[in-house]
Image 1 (cartoon, rainbow, N blue to C red):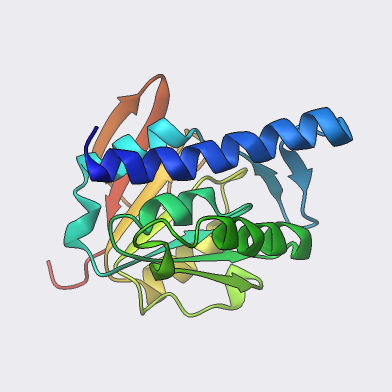
Image 2: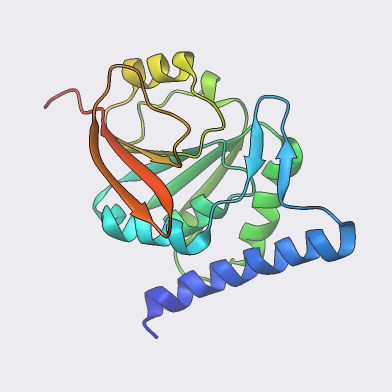
Amino acid sequence: MSKTNEHFMNVKNVYDDFYKFLLVKHGMFPVKDTEIGYWGVSVSEEVHEIFNRIELEKFNHIIDLGSGDGKVVMIASLFTKATGIEFDPWLHNTSLDIKNKLVHTPHVNRANFINGDFMEHNLSQYDVIFMNPDKNDGKLTEKIKNEFNGKLIVYGPHHNPDGMEIENKFDVNGTYVSIYNFSKNE
């Protein structure tokens, strides 16, 4: 097994253990109403495959909008600098706890977590956005168009930015993935 795959498996195993803990100890499925949206898990292998396909290591900084428990950010940190922004304090703290459990896995120090509302966060400092939206939000689309210059990864079929064409789309284990180009200089 390559070192990269070994590091990915470290991240995956910590999250798998966390979900088992939620279910066995608390009878809780890994879903939650955050007051401004819903958190649900992304599939580790699918996220890893997406980042390999788009060659995430060629980008400088990715942000996960509504980062939940931080899984996407932790996987992204294996490729590049990664930030997650999450409104729900419990999910944000969970991200920090899991990052601490992975402190000895190379590159996780590139993961950063913000507790806040991504609608109030400036997106201009990132060149990739990852989102797993629970609804189509015209305000978010306008925010991205106004502030962002890069690639938008939409995980799942729930959001299609109005007025933007898909640059690339593909299926990863039955999950629909869309890539949009918001580059202002093309």
